[in-house]
Image (cartoon, rainbow, N blue to C red; front, side):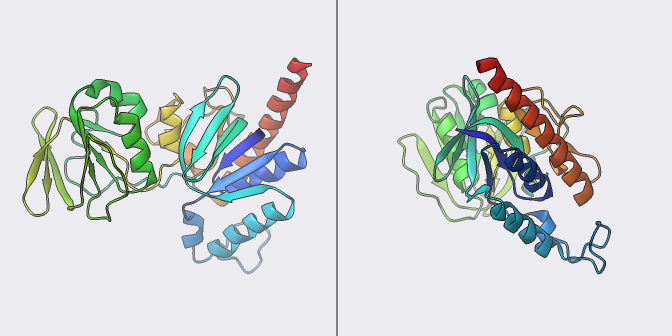
Amino acid sequence: MYDVIIIGAGPAGISTGLYTKRANLKTLIIYNEESLLEKAEKIENYYGFENGISGKNLYKSGIKQAKNIGIDLKHEEVVKIEQMEEGFNVVTAKDEYNSKTVVFATGNKKKKPQINGIEKFEGKGVSYCAICDGFFYRNKNISVLGSGNYALSETNELINIANRIRILTNGEKAPEFRADNVEIETKPVKEILGNDKVEEIEFDDGTKIKTDGIFIAQGVAGSLEFARKLGVITRKNEIVVNENMETNVKGLFACGDCTGGILQVSKAVYEGTKAALQIIKYIREMNIDKI
């Protein structure tokens, strides 16, 4: 079991790992999706680089720094995080890892699909969390928007709840998935329709299907999605933390862009440091209690 698993390898996640590893805590960093930092052409307002540095080089240097001090790094997609009696089980598309603590540090890059009707029907048939809202769709016909591992994970959560599920890939390649009550539709989605709630989905070719609800699971799940599934308090699109980067769920921390505020490298590094110091304290107190 790891002492800490950090989801994300940007400035916040790497900074957390540098401190926890040096405190002799068993540390794992899991990362998959590219960081927004990589898209920054040049950073000139961060300490120590007299001629500036590209976001891509800064990002890669951070990962190399983590490897150099012996931090375990896994380039895998996290699809589920489960709370255990003591700690957490982090499930990726390849493996599973247990940890006493988890840190969300994947930034805040969740973008809603550009489909008419999504915002209109949020809370009225449009959902972002199968674990949270699946109960309300017992024995109903529903849809899951997405084509990757995250969409398949959400489908698995719903498969024994719903009567029938349609995976809508929105023009993407159909995933490998077999189940008696699951169909796959690859046509691009144009609009979500209904009166007081979701009733239909219209495709680009003008055809429509009936549905009682649609779960948005396009792309890769980020900090916000996992946080909500674990009962973490969120505000708008931000994870709520205290001054020590702790969420309301014991053992869960968050730092960087996912906590809101100014979206700067300096802020991410600071919050990563704060989270690490609190995790070190938390683990040491946990170990003392077991003596």
